[in-house]
Length: 107
Image 1 (tube, rainbow, N blue to C red):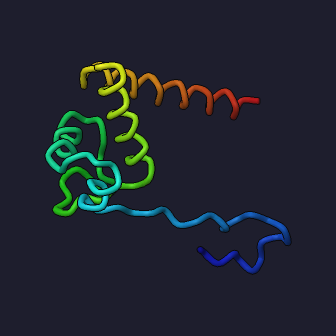
Image 2 (cartoon, one colour):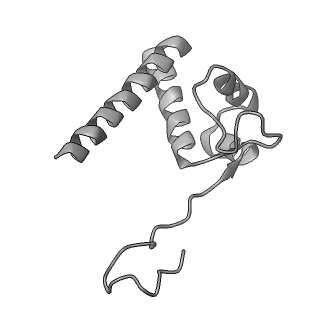
């Protein structure tokens, strides 16, 4: 856990967030059940991206990537969706979230 700043007001939650967890390919495979080949395929298809860049020798992933992988696998198994269909759905979800944030900021 990160240390709170000394000048933060009492009761403030500033700087109290947990640092982001970083996962290696091996750990992502273990936690999600997705093979490393499938992980690479999803990277090539643009469905996920390593947090340290697409050209990293040892890609690392975050919690959002794990959620996305689980969502992809669910859409494939439960609904038989193709990767292009999943890509479109993920894009639409991201755009919806962006627009919602924009609306909240305008209020």
